[in-house]
Image (cartoon, rainbow, N blue to C red; front, side, top):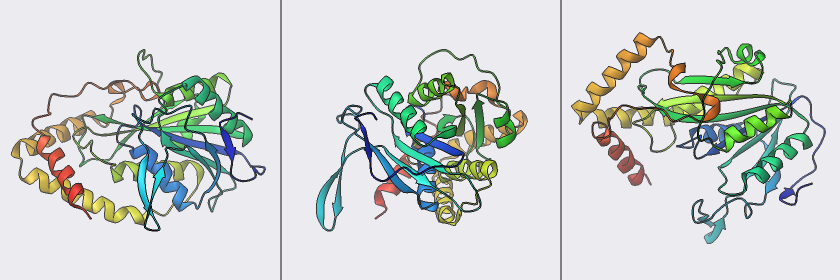
Length: 302
């Protein structure tokens, strides 16, 4: 076993285990995909089984530790990747879950650790998740794109997985996907496209969309009521900001028109398995009011 792997509990035999992972950073710019995994960890009452030593993999000047108050005492919270095990109701499969920050160092070694973990739990399926900005409006359903090693995932998620020919920079998610596929382990990557003008904080609509796809694919029934208030507050904040910015309202109406005309066919814009950069319209000044308002609203929240 790799020196970076710390067992927190016994690894028990699993049944047809599925590995679910997301990494905040290049492939998940606002952390919405990772928040989806964190939501499942909580909803499925997952149990921590493995910690990965962060020291070899993180530059703490870039991925900073957090200071938290615990029992009225200050404590350091290090960015420790923690792997959980869950057996959600209504399914006979085990799920292994990981939500972490993208490592800064030694990606090859980190990927080896992840693959060793997948082997330890005898995972037969691996899924990664990402969320990237795109020129789509917040008033329309979240678009999900699929990349897969096998066409069976198209039926599983009811999505097409086109062939991608992207070449260029990638994130740890893309590295893990390719390395897992080289070892002939079934792998798919599900990506959410989110409004690029709402890049501050996690988008609850993205979280809900990803979880619903997981539930559909594996017959799990994850309660989503905890997201209802977050979704309501999110929409109210956005709409309030737009009222004070006619330019933003006009811009979003244009996005709605393009979205509706395209019939949600935006695959050519985005290559989900290779973390491609998406060309976005020059709208920084137009929608700056929305960003500023959302940031101020969050800062004022107790």
